[in-house]
Length: 111
Length: 114
Image (cartoon, rainbow over all chains, first blue to last red; front, side):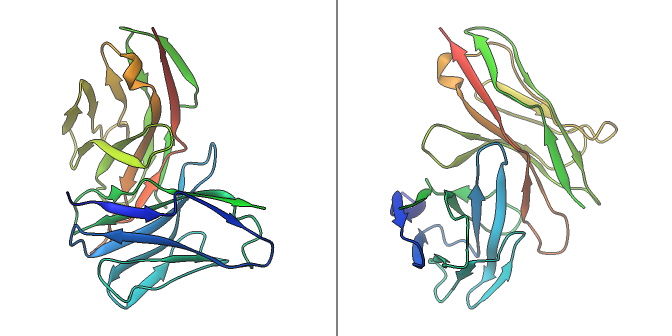
């Protein structure tokens, strides 16, 4: 079945450490997105990519970085510059004007 | 800019009750509107959508009508079940050439009791 796979499901970060969240899709979608979800705040866009080797900042990109070397992969790195990284991170993909499909998320916590 | 405001929760209902979740939006142009549902510990699933004024989206007994005159897209279900307990998000697509980013409301938590 086609879909979006996020891993790991749970991730813990130590102070000063960078961590990378994986997002892979086999839907052949052109665009991919990363969102951050905090309680009571809905989803906020971190980064998005419309084609391979290109990506743009979303509304809250500070402290995060991404790459898009392959169409099916869009990893997100949470850097040590992100001072409040504890959140639920969701990856999504879409093509054209079709609705976005979401993965099951990664929950990041600080040790 | 584009924004979505939805009814604050949490909402607690008994089975077979009527559910309404209000959603209003601010947007330039003619955005598409969506309702997504999130079950505990999972990602978001598309529940329904509408792409132009007066369109009615429907799925699994849920309905919402795109009302341009009131800039609203309220979600309704006539008889809820315990399995409808989830967080519901209203969203709109940010209009623009090749620009399909979504703006989300804060989410409404719905709990249905047997």
